[in-house]
Image (cartoon, rainbow, N blue to C red; front, side, top):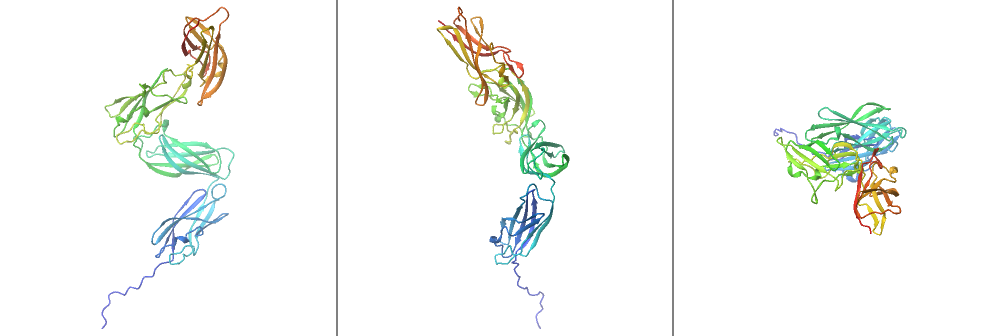
Length: 472
């Protein structure tokens, strides 16, 4: 009698050596498509058989193979990314695109070949114009979105590009930009916070969604979802409390606050920048060093700091007229919280100021001779910013000497530049007549009030320089 068998004997397992292909993902841009394929085989994949002949793509007026890049390779599986690009103008031609894996294209290490298989059939449709999002960068005062415009009909009128940012609290910001209607044009749209305010710890935390505007001709139809980012801001908050501009200095008072406290050691003159017109207003000097702010810690944990800026040994002039901007510069010299997070680099405020005093660059050049008490000449390089230089002329400059006033004549003048700054190079001369002479003494020179026009206004009486004159 045979013994009772409770189990059947196991048969030897046959190796699955022929590569088996499985599509992992498909991604698309207006000009490229990518498909990721996983090949598996018990004996492993022969990497040398992975090439551009593995996957073919066919579609409307389109037929080509896809370039191959091995993403990873393990003992029994290999993952490959295949990419095909459209070389025609504009985005893909609308229609159905079929991707297939050719039979025998990929082999296992024992030489077994794959079977033919489909990698997918995809319906692609793009309008005459398509806006593609390429990148997002967090700026100090908003989000910078990198875009590419694809169009089948380049030229003609500009393209209206629109981007919408939806924040976690439900609020939305829309920024529209007019750009050249050129195929493949790259550009950037900055979606700014209100008033160009910097990000801080009070901003909403969570998912920020970006949408691209869809147009039919010039009509905005809506927004297509393009990207989502999880953002959490920890920067200290900055609030400008007051700005006081005088003829000789500007004081900026700001409050700094944070949910974890402000690092008092981080206060320095570098925390803030003031620009008057195109020029940066320097900090007041404490001896030979820039003076830091006056810092006042508050009972609620915030800190009030006052920063003073002034030109060195002179008042503000026409050179500083125009738009004034108060902002925090990128860099390490910013106020920090106790965790080391710095204030955002952003604009704190904008104003417009006009100064009618006309400044001059460097000391004027005086020419006078002891043996000739009838002649004085002075070369002056006036700041030409915001000045109508055609209004310079005779009688602009006066000399005061020993209680007498003398008007000088313009003998030469020319508009030029030094280090990129506009200057009016001039020479004014006094020549007394027969029987007249100058006496020795302290001479002071001024540009007369109303002599020239600056920012559409009459110039103020402006000091030029002073010298001791000595005549025989």
